[in-house]
Amino acid sequence: MNEVRASVLKILITGPQGSGKTTQAKLLAEFLKVPFIGMGEILRTKAMADDELGRRIKESLGKGELVDDEIVANFTKEEVDSKNSFVMDGYPRSLYQMELFDPNFNKVFYLEIPEDQVLERLLRRGRLDDSEDLIRQRLNLYHQMTEPLLERYESQGILVNLDGAKSIDEIQKEIRERVNG
Image 1 (cartoon, rainbow, N blue to C red):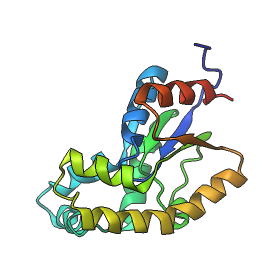
Image 2 (tube, one colour):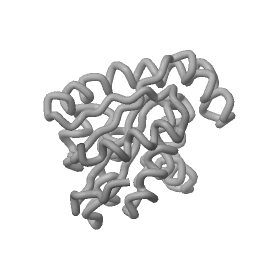
Image 3 (cartoon, helix red, strand yellow):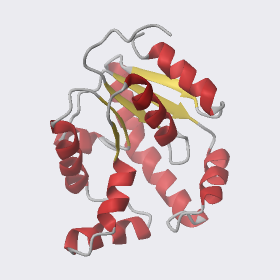
Image 4 (tube, rainbow, N blue to C red):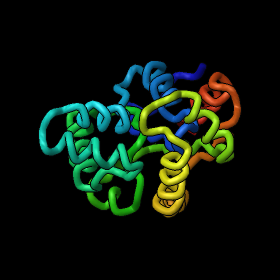
């Protein structure tokens, strides 16, 4: 494997729910020896807090809705502020979130995967917020909000589209080969 050339790496791995982005982001962060920032995990942890903010987040997640943009942007900014390099998944989900806080990624990897495979994967993992109706609702929201963001990354020349239906190892190999490419 070639040495990673950049001293500051800010990488986003994105894709629809169930595309494997968290798995890929964790593997890449470990390989690069940089922090992993997963907004889904952060939000699920914050939702367990017995306070107003925790209850608001839990309510949004339970309805299959996205958590308030300002809340998510603030959490992300807190996580990113002390880190020069990182691999992230789950933020931003919209152009508006990007306007609130832009982590200034060097590279964005998008895992494309057919919707029927997403549904199958999410139903298999068995989370409380993974009923078929809620999954379909989140996928619709995802496509409406995230596709314009992908277009922005493409226009910046930092978007890499990958086949998210491949094996974990195949995808990770491709990501590692293209981190600096």
